[in-house]
Length: 250
Ligand code: PEP
Image 1 (cartoon, rainbow, N blue to C red):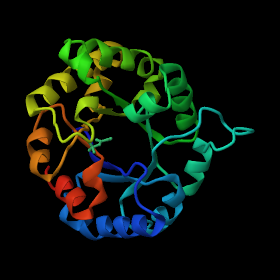
Image 2 (cartoon, rainbow, N blue to C red):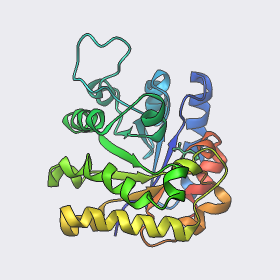
Image 3 (cartoon, protein in one colour):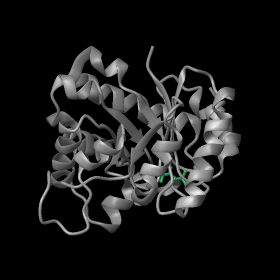
Image 4 (cartoon, helix red, strand yellow):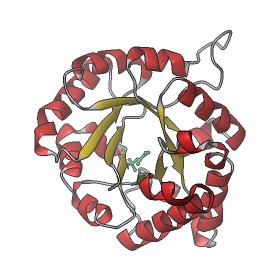
């Protein structure tokens, strides 16, 4: 049985007080979600600590949205994986398409971030996904395969056993367009096949989340697919009731 995960990526939204209120709302609704679902919230850096503090007595985990490539030192503005772990973060989102697109993150950058995350015992949620042009030219399989081969294939078996992958088609992020359940299943099964070619049977245990305009009205259908193990949720994670409703979609 693979772990089921619903993770909220708050992006650069919420002021600290709003973030705390949102986290408390998620904590309040958690009882409605099956214990078999791991809920994770990923607030901005500025309110990670307050959110971790509020969620201390719950089983809701907290993740960061990024970490530095370096361990420590003269890197103005950066936040290290060690710092995040010391705060109580358990997860870190790496390779989100917005970071690839707006901040030039490459596989080389991401290999370093993955190494820093594992050194600090953070679980990476590694994002992959094609853009619209790549999908329309039927190159989505090769794009996703390269994103996996160039980064995930460098992990040890032990590191891979802790990894979470999120498939997020760029054309579906924040656009209101969602991949159909069939499209999601097709590429999730393909991702698992690519993982199996390197890691063998361990690929069966790797949670692969879907992300891209996932909301309460479409989550159940997407999550019902065999190789979809949950969701990485953007916009709908900003309302506690919607996030909880997505958690209940299992
Ligand atoms: C995301 O950016 O991780 C995401 C899935 O966003 P949205 O749900 O808003 O499409």
